Length: 417
Image (cartoon, rainbow, N blue to C red):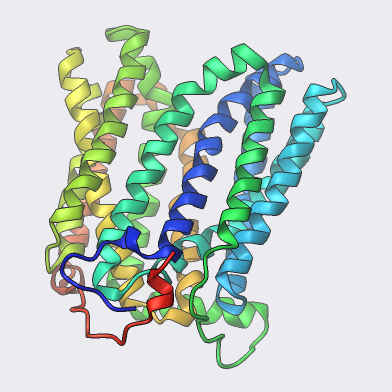
């Protein structure tokens, strides 16, 4: 695929189909958690039962993601996208039918939730890794930015209509809509036609290929260092947002303020994505890591102020800074990692991001009770800033440069509808 000055990622058909599929999928994904929560409550469950269902989903997601990385490097990534989406449509469709037909139960929701968690993990690494195959190298950052913008907008819309949809048609029909989005996404993914990535040279077995992926991570200091930073971030910040945030903000400002704060954060994500469409610094990882320090603004605002304006600004800065980092992070991975190991590297990135979050959710309450909620939010902000400063001490993080796109032969079929 070739690129010109006035070229655009959306001019390339594989990227258009990929964005269309992931966007429609995440539209349903924004609705599903709300519908599932009300489904558990309607079946007589409470916070413990809901926590069990959500926790089993997260456990299955983390447990299967390494296999998703191996398969994403061994098999065509389009096949992984199509297969995981189609299977998820069936699994979520069963959940919806059980609720609509009044034969559901909390154990059934838990089991099918684990199935959906596994399917998400199997398709996730391929979904992230395939972006570089859909556009010329010179358009990669803009492609990442456009994809993230579309996904964030889809989540905003999904979250926004979720409650209304559950009230209007019930949890079962809301989850049926989610199943439909999986099915539509699977159909759209069949149109993503990209050159094949060479399979791993030596079939060393499942765990051998996992080990190869781990060695690739460890080969890049910036990569394993920032995965560790992500682990710390989710360990501390996950509980700050999900556990302490609603309590502190609602007690000091009012319950509506928490919804406004989350909305401000999502707006920050979208604005950050729009900025990265135009701003392409040579040291994208260094710049992104610096902006990651802005994520401390949200917990610190909640800890230090009872002003709605301050909390909203802190939430916006959090989303804005995290989005600038995320684009630079994705760009660095896709430019610097060998293509035949890319899905496995993304699987380790996902593990680093998600494995610590459940632990943080469990520990946040007791620690906040011990030192005080506002004091703990201050600790969270300090850990975020400290981890950023630690990462910036690495010369690999500071010096890593984006690659200049080399001229490539034109492949007209890849850029035509």
